[in-house]
Amino acid sequence: AAKREARGNYRQFEANMAEALRMRSTLERDLRRALTAGEIVPYYQPLIALDTGRLSGFEVLARWNHPRYGLMAPAAFIPLAEEIGRIGDLFRQLLAAACADARQWPSEMGISMNVSPTQFADPELASQILMTLHDTGIAPKRLELEITESALVDKVSSAHLTLTTLREVGVTVALDDFGTGYSNLRHLSDLPVDRVKIDRLFVERARQDIENWKIVRAIVQFAHALNLETTAEGIEIAEAADILRDVGCDVGQGYFFGRPQSAAVTSAWLTELVRNPIGVLPRLAL
Ligand code: C2E
Ligand code: MG
Ligand code: MG
Ligand code: MG
Image (tube, rainbow, N blue to C red; front, side, top):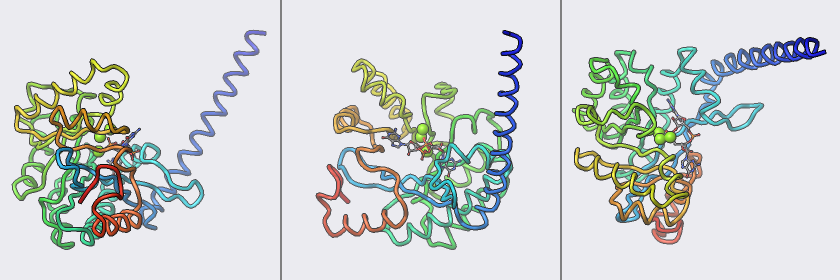
């Protein structure tokens, strides 16, 4: 009986596998089409200077407006885009769209773009970015690139060359998800970065246990000692925003300040903010 059950389980497993593979190949085909059809769109999440409470810009977060599945989160398609070699296309489209949107915003608003480690294999990355900035009339200093430590583990990698080229003209670089990866503290001062983004995990943990704020404070102090700015992700409540400001964290991001939203909502929201700088969101001003 046990044997029969095991065989049954295995058949179920096979069926599930087959189903998963079918799903994946459908998604893969859809993704190739989506890139041509413009279904991948930028969503914008506010970044707030914690000392003044002012809006400093937005992180650009990819969404897939899927005709059948609706709005899809990046976890469902970014890894796939990387695997099938289309992450570069996806990035170029998002950057062009974000630059076009940013041109309609107040000129001090920054945009932060996520870059996959695999994109650094492309020797044209820096020149393509500069071309897009030029064509859309966005000053390089308004652009920040968010990279993960895995893009930089190899010291002589092309990532260093690409980022150095871009930083020379004013583009800034943030180390995303800081604290979750290799976090080789010894090397942090040699990396071509301007900012660390403290992973959401630390802010969440700190909420559960007050002792953990000490870790966040230590990261902020450590980053500042290396002349790096700091951003904290995952700020969901007012208390977290207050504590992060008190420990000297420069920028905050999270549902407390605003969720990622479409270009249309963002632009309406900015118009409202310009008209009435106080009152659109708690503690938020232009
Ligand atoms: P990330 O770069 O660390 O982005 C922050 C993520 O945290 C976003 O998830 C955002 O919606 C979420 N978040 C922000 N504030 C809060 C909060 O207060 N609470 C909670 N629970 N979550 C919050 P999202 O949009 O699902 O993106 C997930 C990840 O996908 C990003 O993490 C980034 O690694 C990747 N990603 C997104 N867009 C792109 C892209 O255009 N290119 C690449 N290569 N990766 C992207
Ligand atoms: Mg990011
Ligand atoms: Mg992050
Ligand atoms: Mg993260």
